[in-house]
Length: 111
Length: 114
Image 1 (tube, each protein chain N blue to C red):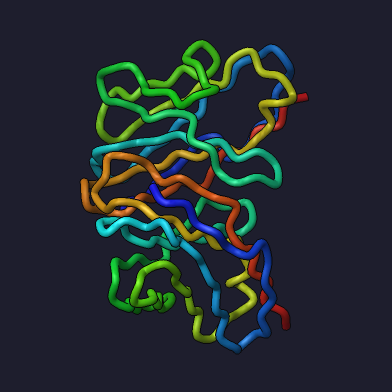
Image 2 (cartoon, rainbow over the protein chains, first blue to last red):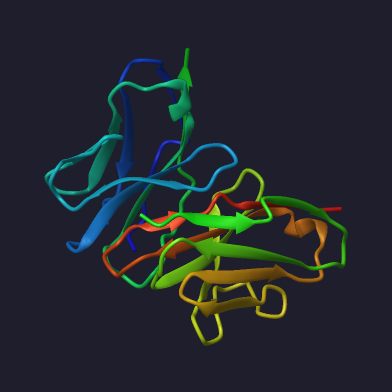
């Protein structure tokens, strides 16, 4: 699976959009971009995934650049409960292999 | 999505003892995994729990230390044997429902070894 690079930490004001970047310059054509988050002392929670088109669900939006070498997770109106470590993971969908976690980005939403 | 529960949620154990962690999924899943998360660190895969056969361990993890069972498609156990303080971690169960499905995680078991 391709390696990802994320900033170690970010702050965001409550009610504003949180934009979390991820670099995956070695991504292969059949690899998807997945985002998970882990709120303190809980198990990781699936957020969203995409291949090359932008994706949106009830939790977030995922913007993938045209060359697919980077992506941005957008939380449109961050709340205090969105404070968590966010993991960007690249892998082949349907692969029998498990997710491999990097160090992620600690997002702190400030009141 | 699959709902995963773990028991116990936390425990404090003495050095040299063993603890068995149970993982129950609310639906049949194709794959189950066990992860470890040491304090302040990211998740590290321990092993893939295979139904009806021996688990597949990642480098650095061995069956004698972390025996795993998976008797059916919805249940697995992880035992942490002969514990030392270095085993103090959160242990997480994870599952995939189907080949193209997402991977889900249990709430974790927080283990403290004294």
